[in-house]
Image 1 (cartoon, rainbow, N blue to C red):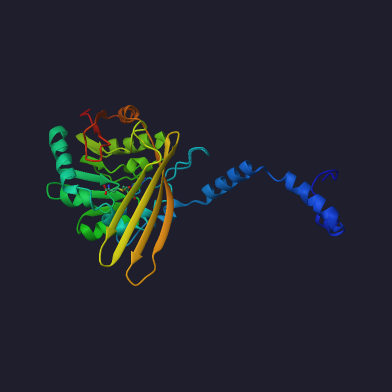
Image 2: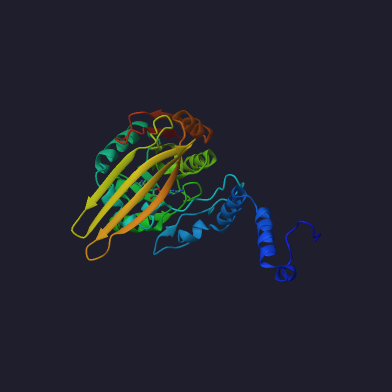
Length: 326
Ligand SMILES: C[S@@+](CC[C@H](N)C(=O)[O-])C[C@H]1O[C@@H](n2cnc3c(N)ncnc32)[C@H](O)[C@@H]1O
């Protein structure tokens, strides 16, 4: 429409001399959206194409029962997409090496602490324990000695390892915000800062509401949060290595932050005998929520909540939420 200074039509372009064409091309470039807007459009388009429940292999995965219930909540606004983000490589392609990389973590002693908290606070009288974001099932493998256990995780790859470790234990794919199991538990745990993978405070509250829904009255939720915003150190370099006769894994991490978002830039090197060394890179973003705010969010989900600063050896403390009897 129009003519004047607007973009030219195809027929017109064919009749132009090279010089005129260059001049018009310049004009065309000026009419393109500025880079920021183009970037935003691109991200929005990518976000709309993102179908995490397909990536996670829903609804069934090699005998793992999906614990989805309400499936994945609808997208609520363009600023706060209420969908799980792509699983970090560590819980996805590199899941078979997860246990090797966290090899120095003292799961038996963590479980002793968790069990003593449960003995102290649980008033529901039963012995059922649900580990949400159970990963490869390390905590569950010790908890199952004294409790009837069950596990939920978003990653089929992590659950595949857990399933090998825990024959006979009920494990299922589920998002911590939306799984529905149709039963309640005396203890729900969510450990090693798995809630730090949520993207918004609204997601955190939805998760706590879901925990409250799955707790028996008198039962307790035990949550190990991600690092407090005041404690998070940018520019920190951290190295983890594992070596066995068949594989050597190296993970180097560099931390940075933008406001309430932490970003850990990981470099992985995986060397297997007889093969070339592979290099993977990713940025894992987390949500930094102050302890006081986490306690508020848990209270708003209907739990009696408080924070223990000396929780597990990670030093991140533990958030406890007791479901009142009525
Ligand atoms: C750091 S690992 C912790 C695993 C295990 N709790 C442990 O202590 O070894 C974090 C786990 O959270 C899971 N996860 C991340 N987002 C999740 C979500 N929205 N719902 C359920 N699991 C999630 C990942 O798949 C991963 O297995």
